[in-house]
Length: 280
Ligand SMILES: NC(=O)c1ccc[n+]([C@@H]2O[C@H](COP(=O)([O-])OP(=O)(O)OC[C@H]3O[C@@H](n4cnc5c(N)ncnc54)[C@H](OP(=O)(O)O)[C@@H]3O)[C@@H](O)[C@H]2O)c1
Image 1 (tube, rainbow, N blue to C red):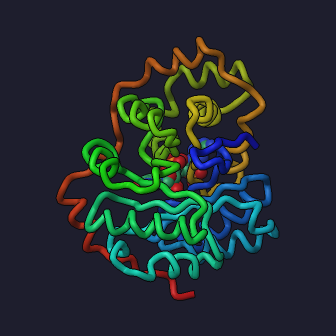
Image 2: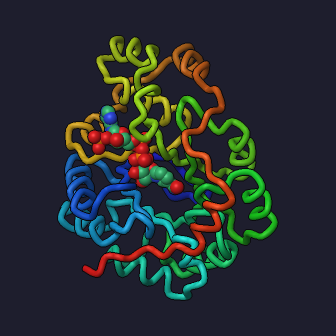
C-alpha cells in the first residue's frame, strides 16, 4: 500500500473503501471483504447510518485495530452535542478514530470544529478534517482554527480537480480525500475514451485508470462499492504509473464541472436533519 504523510506526521493509506449509500448489511460486507483483501482505510459518517455495521466489518476482518485507518464524520446536528465524539466511537466500537471530520459547513460548525480539536488533544482522533469546506467556509475557518486540519474531503475527479482549492491546501499541507472519485456511478466520466485507451496500454479498467490518476494527483481516494470484484479492482492500481504526458492528457478533461451542487437551503436542511442511528 502507498501512504500519504499528513501535516502532523501520521500516515494514511492512499486507497480506502467508501460506504456512502450502503445499507448496514452492505457496508458490513464491503468493509470486511475490503480489509480481508488488503485495504486498510475505511470511510464512513454519522449520516451514512452504518457506523455500527462498519465497526462489525472491521472486527470480523480479523485485522488488529492499529492496522486499520478509520475515518468518520460528525453530522451538523451533532456539533453541539457534547457527547457526539464518544457516541461516534461507541457506535464504531473503538477507542479512537484515525480521522474525524466535520461533514458540512452547516449549523454551528465552529462548535463542531472545536469538538474535533478537543478529540485530537484527548487522543480520540489521531487526525482531523473538514468536509465540503470550500471557498468562504475555509477562509473563515482559517481565522478560527487552533489546530490546522490534516484533511479536506471534497468532490474531486478528472472533470473537477479542485484547482483553486489546492492552492490553499498546499499552503497548509492539508491533504485532499476525493469523494465521487468515479463520478458516483455516472457513466460519462468512466466512458471517456482516454481511460479506455490507457486501460488497454496498462491492462486495467477505465475505473482503475481514474483511481490511479487520483493517487498520482496526491489525493487519497475512497471509491464506494458493494461488489467484491469492483472492490478488488479498485485496490489493484498501484502496480503501474501514468506518465507525465498521460497525466497531462487527463488534465484536459477538467472543465470545472461538479456533479453535486449544494444550495444554501440544503445547508440549512442539513443543520436540522438528525440521523436515526442504528440501535444495534
Ligand atoms: N464528504 C462527503 O460529503 C461525501 C459525499 C459523497 C461521498 N463521500 C465518500 O466518498 C465515497 C465515494 O463516493 P461515492 O461512493 O458516492 O461515489 P464513487 O466512488 O465515485 O462511485 C461509486 C459508484 O461507482 C461504482 N463502482 C465502484 N467501483 C467500480 C469499478 N471498479 N468499476 C465500475 N464501477 C465501480 C459503484 O457501483 P458498485 O457498487 O456496483 O461497485 C457505485 O455505483 C463514498 O462512499 C463516501 O465514503 C463523501
